[in-house]
Image (tube, rainbow, N blue to C red; front, side, top):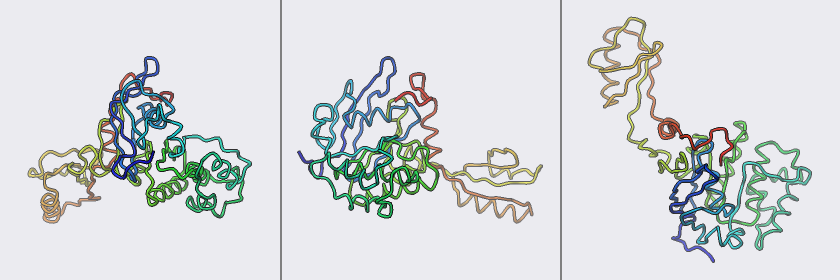
Length: 313
């Protein structure tokens, strides 16, 4: 059963899942369009991995409805499996197989696999084709994980915290692979707790806290980020007061912070005042609310039912 062009890749409504007295997912609604990169953000134990496992068919929701590529992953998983690729947080690839051997082995599990050399080229491992897995760097191993997920030429890829524990170089390599998948028209659904990862990769983002989605949107508009006022920060010498017309400010360790209603007018008056009075105003900067600022304001206290030690799912 193929999806139609206007059918979303993922459509979930009111999904709920508990493990004993731990309520991992508490009524999540989710729609992921075909061809987009969608990121689920949230602290450890927020329910991100459990949500993915329900969509993949590894867990059955206690309540709610789920359609992935037009299929119910709970009851139609055999039909769904050849059409999805999964990259887990940790994989069990044989360290002593070569890159090509590893991909060829997994390709054999699918009815219409993508050619091995083509997959290797897609993830940028051509130079490492005959290298053994144990000899690969962390970023190269993650590329191999994605290659294995691509072996069956899936329509949809699930990436569960794909760069956790990576150094900056390895993370950049993994990001390049995800961008390549998007360019191929693949749908990518990933979980992460890295704000810069979501900012750089995702078309849309959902923030999950305590098993619920508390905000959803593009990285630039999430939580009303585009409507938030920027903060102006500068330094003044000790004992120098700010002009009264500036209104309320916050002074901490020599820094002055204020959130103006009109940024341009305030900057114009402020710099004119400094020039006229001869007061040195050092390190003037404008700080716009980051995705991390918005995320932290949304997450707050995850609540007693959410484990923060990573043991909850």
